[in-house]
Image 1: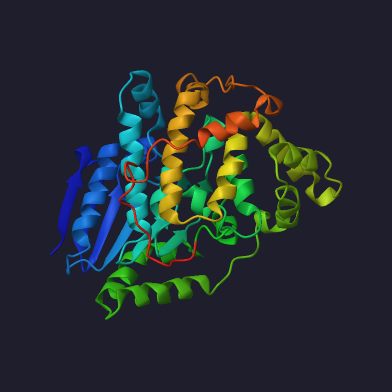
Image 2: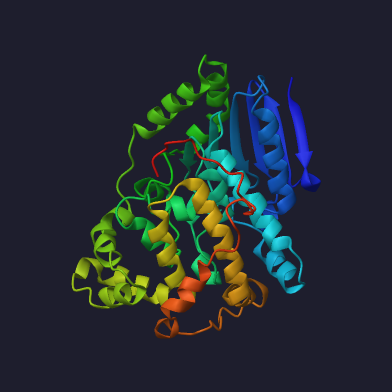
Length: 374
């Protein structure tokens, strides 16, 4: 018998059958962007399912044919901040706690990422045991374009991409397809329509196994056994590793400007043009963030991000970025300051100033396994 659950006014649904809890983000008109009620509902369900013997595998997917999840409802967060409410803080505390839970979940979580996956969608999928890209997958961490840092665990998972790919994706916000996401280590397998259609049946079989986690690992190995041809990211990887290895955003920009290899010239020019449209302040903060993230654990990464996102709202570029790209849609943000040269080291350091003691931090309860390597 199938059990059906609904929360947040129907914006998140769950169906439990054959040992599998299938969670559907149900805001297709908004590209399944997350609201706090959706986040809290999913977190509550996962907490209950941890000890429910009837649930052995969790599947995350998005409603509609366009998106898994295009992020959080950033327009509402901007409105909440401007109204002087604590909604942004409450949203990010809830979101990061959920993301961390998924990374540490004791039962296998599978994410069907056939569609747009950005920001908050990456947060709830990167901790899954099996992340499957489909033909429509488009993945991005576009936060610097709206005056924010690549959060939702990006501090942790972007530096762990091969070479300098994480720096490239975090700074530019470049959107990539499934094949490139596989090369970046952000998905585990690419699947076609037939394989995606068979996924519920496959997971029901996994749920009946003596060890569902091992069964999901075997499914991952089988799906990944047929490697797709290399994509654009693999082609430009040598240039990414060369240009994005520099220790400052200015040096990265200068390196791109002097690309001499005809095979990479167009890519370098586009990457440089993209950086020029991003918030200069948040480019520098992001580079410092990712450098720190390479040597800290997951829980500490989320704690760091909470302070960074609040600093972004206080600084104001996120308010301007959301205005320009989402509210007024004039695509002409007025960044403060407008150039890299005007962003001082002191301004960057201020983003990382501690806000809470260790015990007072809103995410102090997050814990990683003791002795786990960073």
